[in-house]
Length: 380
Picture 1 (spheres, rainbow, N blue to C red):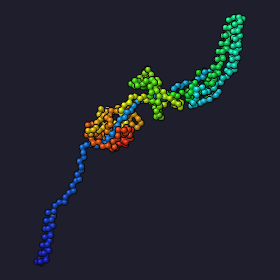
Picture 2: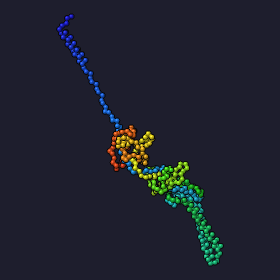
Picture 3: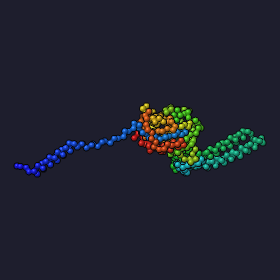
Picture 4: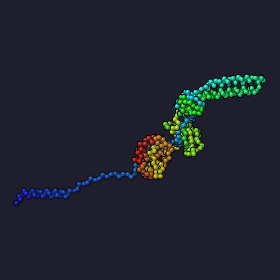
């Protein structure tokens, strides 16, 4: 078949188009790939958060654990036999000295006392008469001695009955609180039977046992403080320090006397004796800032002026409910409050202050107040 002119033109155009497409494909450059984002290189110096602390003068204390006790106590007992006929006071009542507590049936003692008093009066008259007769020479000395002996016997009988009658009314020998009553209305008592206990809490006492090492700081009559179970602090003085150690614990008994106008207290509750020592310079911090070094020594890490981490051993001076006082640190000191677990002594760091640096007159407790939140995240 013979091709026409139009066919040759179409074939030529197709060939040229294919050649152009092939040329463009071979000469096209590959699409550039996306380059990775270059991350900034982190600094080798580790950043830690620090706070500046200033030392203050504080007075450390020896704390001796003990318990409260009355100044004095007595278990009242019956001096004679008889039945309880009246109860004037009950357990827990406060009584004044001489106040009536219970009455015991006096039986015939009032009548016997009247008879003895009448006989005593008779003997007194007889003795006076004999004295007069002896003075006139109408009576011998023997008769006078006899009347004198009879008078003394009558007086003794009156005295004895008065004591017995008084014993039927049991009164408080001193002011105090009644506890542990052992009788009820109608109870028959024998001589020596227990009735009730009386405790005097003005002043009240804290009794404790001190270790040998603390004896040098305990002097009879020296001021000290007592801390009771309700966390109240009371001023007092050391009234007794034992000279003999307990054979079992090798400790020495100590008593602190505390004035107590309220005259009420609990016997046997937990209490502490706080003995003040000499003043020293210390810093008030939260215990969360403390750590142990490789030798097990307790201390704190701080940043020195050359930006190096320093571990300084510390000594506990005094503990309080919201923090502790420690000594052994420079004054002032930039303590590491966040990140101390990630740095070691001698390592260079970058110190970052979270809060403005406090002035010299700012208190140590203000330091603690601003840093407690940061210290709670220590080591995280």
